[in-house]
Structure formats: structure tokens, C-alpha cells
Length: 115
Image (cartoon, rainbow, N blue to C red; front, side, top):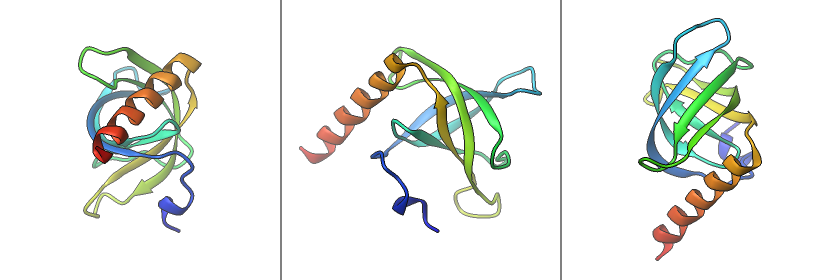
């Protein structure tokens, strides 16, 4: 099933450095997200984690902007052998301020794209 039919939040393409950590790993890993929505993001990585794994995330939507921190769950995995290896992350624990900040950033990008 294609993910686009199930999406309820608009996604915007962007290249965003994301730090993430698994519960059993002490250090952060860094990869780039390639799109973002209020509900989650897709992280391009040659080593995606299995579906259901929880990850602790840190990222900034804009250069020098507010640090967003929260918990996400892997809900989709693209095989590393494909053109777009990586994992879809659903946000499961972001504070309301972070969600509002992401929503405002996405709205601003969508508005610029239409203009």
C-alpha cells in the first residue's frame, strides 16, 4: 500500500539534519530527513530500523530555530537496496509547542510554494 493514501497531514520536502537515538544505544546517530509533516518525517538512511522501534529525536526546523525533541516510532521502512532507503517516523510524543512550531513552518513552506 502506498503511504500517500494514508497520510492525513501535508508533507513538505526538505533536507533536515536529524539526530536520533535508540533506547539501547548511548550515542546519537545523524541522518537527513527528506520530508516533514506535523505527524512525522522520513529519514533517509542506509540502515533503517525495524518497524515498531522507538527512537528519540532532536532536530531544528529552521537554521538556529527552536530545538524539537520527542519520541517517534518507525512505521515504514524502505529497503536499503531501493533508490530511497530509509524509514518513516511517526511522532508519538511531541509537546504541543513543538507541534505548533512544525505546523507553522510547514504552512510557511506550502504558502511560499503556492505563491
